[in-house]
Length: 364
Ligand code: UD1
Image (tube, rainbow, N blue to C red):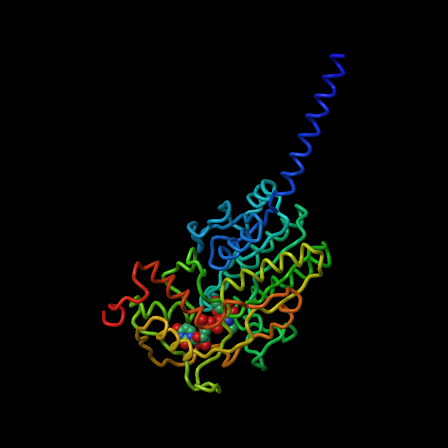
């Protein structure tokens, strides 16, 4: 009787263990590797992934990223051109997909130092993609840009508009798009390329946001001028063929961009084919409209000075986003100008330890 009792006990124990293990597996989160996860859009996407039930693994060399922005999962410090490190991280976490943000993005710097841009953005990405091929990871979401369109002949661009970048930054992103297409054909890698228009705004809960002291884009510069961190905002041209003469862009809130990445991930995990998508709102906003809204939100003056047009600036650039809306079931929720500027403003005030309605702001 005794051995039979023992067998029964072992059997029951095994069944209990199996049930526990399968229950644990059922709730185990899927890991997603986020290169550039300590950056502006990368960290926002980590937050969105976590909230959607995934486990983000941030992979960042911290050259531009900030470890304080990594709050929703582990941070692995490494470079995308470090094949060995990438392999170790992939073996450790076994991610279902990679969202690739890590890149340099300053257009002017890319003109002055193209080698740096091609090494980082093209060579680095090639090492990353080849490592994914080697390790059998098939799903990639790539952070691309409207800069691939250069100066388009039409003001509302679709994904079918000509790809003709006018600076090394834009070229570096277009080259990666080409590499992805070739890797798909040869190795079966599947991708979603997301071409961002003008990413702007900060986290709605103010948990994260851009931390650099030397922003290159209109809205962060405008807010820093209001906060007396810079003397004035140069308006690059007021003689464009637009209603108020200043250039028109399509600003998209970073939380809406993050949400699009979750939807792109689910699109890929559901087995859908590779695709390139514009991400914007389709609504054009001029430089002067940004200036006015920044003053309204902060209740403070924004000193401006007229400057010549910046080389390579198109007068009007907005996105046709119908494809992303249709295929990803994605609609921007937070990209009205007021939300973009007020989150940016509140985030900057928090960073600088000043009150958003400080009476001293306008008079200092
Ligand atoms: C560029 C890139 C875009 C990239 C983004 C972030 C192109 C076509 N677009 O957008 O892909 O994602 O940078 O790196 O290359 N402005 C001023 N004064 C300033 C700063 C900007 O008047 O001090 C004006 C610009 O002339 C432009 C608008 O504000 O009309 C927006 O400029 P910016 O924020 O730099 O973004 P883009 O150049 O549109």
